[in-house]
Image (cartoon, rainbow, N blue to C red):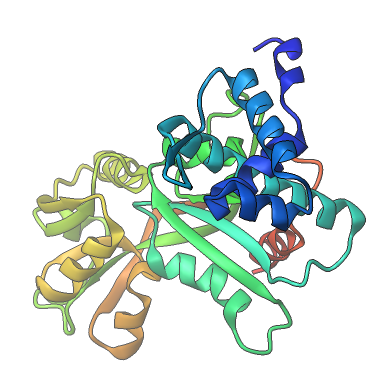
Length: 302
């Protein structure tokens, strides 16, 4: 869109439209705005002319949004929300509302890792007045939302490609050893790595996981061939299978930390040179939410 195409739009047009959409009535909207009904009608006509679409249709004395009007309303509300955020950020004043932190996590990321990272924000008496929004999706979907500032932070167990997207920054915030975890006691006796892996029935992460790649490299280097009983992308499901199947699982201990602490599962030992990395991905912005800096600092010092 050319810059001159935006001249027909202004904040007042959108504000009048937003009020009319909320009231569904010109007279009530005019009373709320403390202007004449004709002034409201004029602003709406100018907005409709600029957009090239009717935004309302009449049902008696009530106004109903058209399909185009519903789309415009969604954008208008986003614009007003961003405007309020802009004023609060630049002026450095209290907004009277909790700080909002919008976090996206890839679907394969350990729930325990997410909880360990974010729990301090919600602990009573932690000193942070925070409203947390947590979404789960694929990395590509989350990055799309991050780029348009609908998310503040993306948590991932895979990094972005260095230099491929200059609109985001990716940093490693944690590294977890990957372990062999299974029943208590282990049915086959003592574990000796790497020899015990040969022919061992295992539950492993799926091929999309870096853990799987590193584990297969480890096995190839030592000439052992385990028997893959199941491969699972979702860490929550891997946790359930490790707990209930009786098989040995290749998994970061953070995934099964509760089961290991309670004695339901036993950590047989770490796999040398096999790790899971956790990354924080943020958009390049002049102003970042203060609570985001708190999360990243806490992770860096953990």
